[in-house]
Image (cartoon, rainbow, N blue to C red; front, side, top):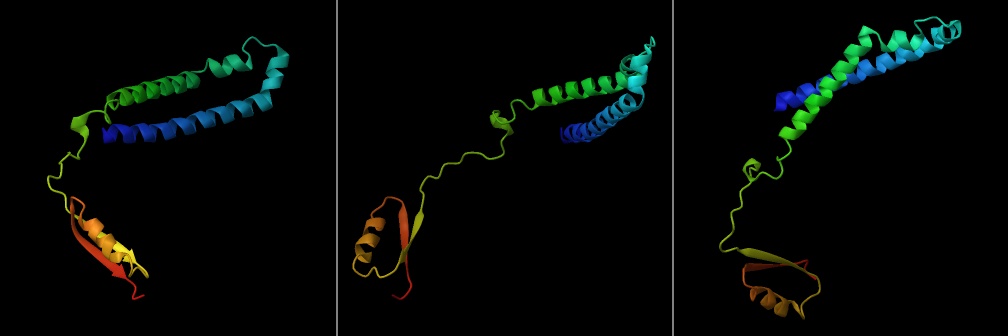
Length: 135
């Protein structure tokens, strides 16, 4: 699956570059020769020469092939986030959780005792650490 995605990314870059070059060549051709061919009224006009060419057909074919490959890749990855067998993390509940509470104190000499007692009364608190900055 990783190789397929890597190939999709690489081919997207190549197709994007090919399409940009094709557009630039068409703009250049239209800017230099296009007005003369349109004004001359020849049977094989500029648009017929460009859009019925073999290069254009191959570029469109490669674009369609890439889009189909992308759709196939997306359909294969559709259930990745919703499929529980794809996840590596398994739920393992904690039977008896143990919590250590750290309480910062600054000039709390009047109320720190009651605060520590309140925290110790909680169900899963195993220890309480009071950090004082010697105030």
